Length: 96
Picture 1 (cartoon, rainbow, N blue to C red):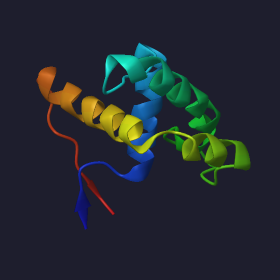
Picture 2: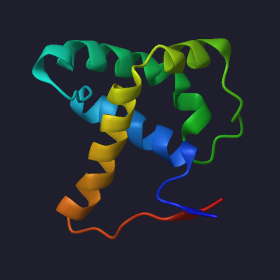
Picture 3: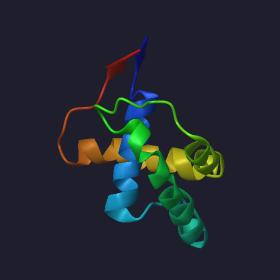
């Protein structure tokens, strides 16, 4: 099954965006909240970094991920995916 980005790639991309930009938000009024929610995902880094041998998230990671607003998370992933084309890089693809 083809997908744009695997879940692990999405998480890694999201964590890179959090570190690089401090997070993105869909609206000015939610920017601080989304950024805070995304910055809490740093606890998930050990589980999504390519080459990591530990891919089973702990309770802290799961709690942080569960507290992120769906629109905030989706918007960040969408923005990250769009950055590749804006940088004239090929679209990412993966096989599950």
